[in-house]
Length: 330
Image 1 (cartoon, rainbow, N blue to C red):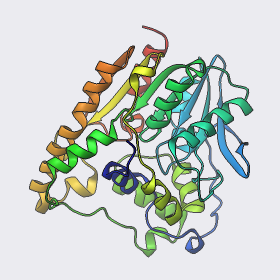
Image 2 (spheres, one colour):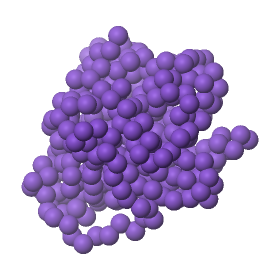
Image 3 (tube, helix red, strand yellow):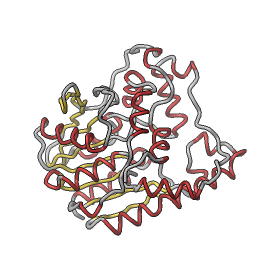
Image 4 (cartoon, rainbow, N blue to C red):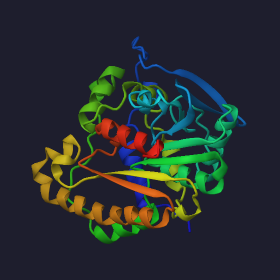
């Protein structure tokens, strides 16, 4: 049964932009995105347009889906590594970046319909789907219900049973942990887009593509309506057994405090609580890896210990190598 879960709230806290209302932010400072891609829009529903980036390349189409709160630009530094053998396109889901921001339509089935409509408008038949984080839910539903549209799947720290994980997190943390709060940007950090980019890079510890951060800075800020929409939507236990396509799930596994984000690993005062958090998260996440191996008919799991949730940024070369090997059937 679908229900609002803590895991969704965790994702919102981790992935959505920091608190900063777009109306209060400075306009463009003249920065130019140097990534090689062709932008465009496709209408996927009445009054709803999806922004996409075509990174070029020839061969089998590969469609990249961003994590919650991010945009197609999340793949600016990653997509070019695949264009020698594949035609690579990235999508920004409704509610973020330059895509339309309707007040409704954030249930997973509607997001899947958006993807299918985008594939049709772009004249893409059967594609490889690669998705980060929350995109895993859209990928699983799409591949299970529309097997003719998916040739292979790659989950980038995205193949989780968030219903079960939430229950396990509740059991692991019956009492709130003594851990530091995520740092919020000050006025100086949000005064300019460049300042905001620097703040995100410093606090996250990985160089998320600048165009993605700037897109969120200019178009999203902290979108309260979208936050409420995602919080109110339940998640389903993934039905991996319905998927016929081969799938690769790449997981980022945290073992020690030194592998956490900078603001966490530098906080010695809360070291005990952070270590408890790591152990509890592993207890909640490990069953998802086991479930994927067991239920996915043609599934492969790769664990990257010490990798960041943005695994395709923190461990880009290793992830690219694993994906190429998987797609080429080696």
